[in-house]
Amino acid sequence: MAEYDKDKQAKEYYLDTPVNNYGFFLKGAHSLDWGMKNRLSRIFRPDTGKTVMLAIDHGYFQGPTTGLERPDVNIVPLMPYADAIMLTRGILRTTVPPTLTKAVVMRCSGGPSILKELSDEELAVDIEDAIRMNVVAITLQIFIGGEFETRSIHNMTRLVDMGLRYGIPTMAVTAVGKDMVRDAKYFRLACRMAAELGAQIVKTYYVPEDFDTITASCPVPIVMAGGKKLPELEALTMSRRAIDEGASGVDMGRNIFQSDAPLAMMKAVNKVVHEQMSPQDAFDYFNTIKAEG
Image (cartoon, rainbow, N blue to C red; front, side, top):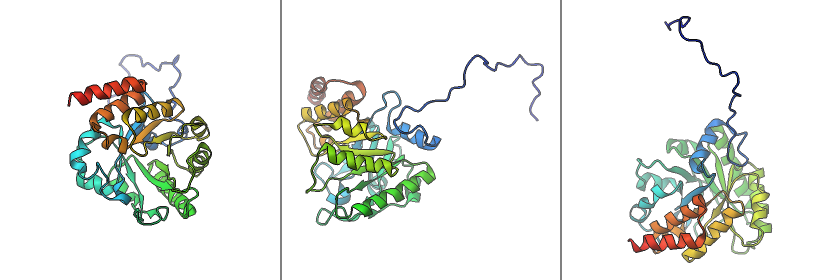
């Protein structure tokens, strides 16, 4: 039986201190459940509101992409320097040490290879398996304007519903077909559709003209996709511009693991995203670490 505390000191109810409602730091997430907010806080650093994600899921349709031939050798050493890793369940189970405590964003769509029509995707992971693997977010491609546009959107809404059931956020990735124009008008459409239909995060490409209109018109955080391999200074400049123009982080793959010095590039991107370092200073930092081996 609990001890009666009538003889103890007077209690302190802090009558002059308002209750802290703990307003959430992330765009569009104020009405989400505690579990989902907690997971989002593992992807996006609360002190900066930003994220550096390491994308290594390319093999799900490309096979052993250059730089990803042996992820156990080339990629695992980079993981501690990312806020989150985006990958497939196969690589997670076979390659990633279970002692890694970084946030896992799991690819949940798949089907066609690069030899077929890429928009012909289906959901490829059951939500219970995602829960078993302790993921903090689930993700898939949407193909706005693609041959199987409607199917990809329905895949997303089904994934959103499953995620909401268990407090796991969904990130929609705006895929761009070879015949589509990569401009702000297209990405405004794709990103807004994803958010309107329930995605809690949207990953999209940077465009040099009017990218800020994409982030402004999307009511959830936008994470910039790294895209094809660029020279390091160009990739760092693109990252800085995306952050300055409203992105909540970057999700880079090839610009990290195809770099001449992947670890140095990983650290330099962190400097740009979380410490607001200029691209040139970050490039100098990259070269310093590269020279140190």
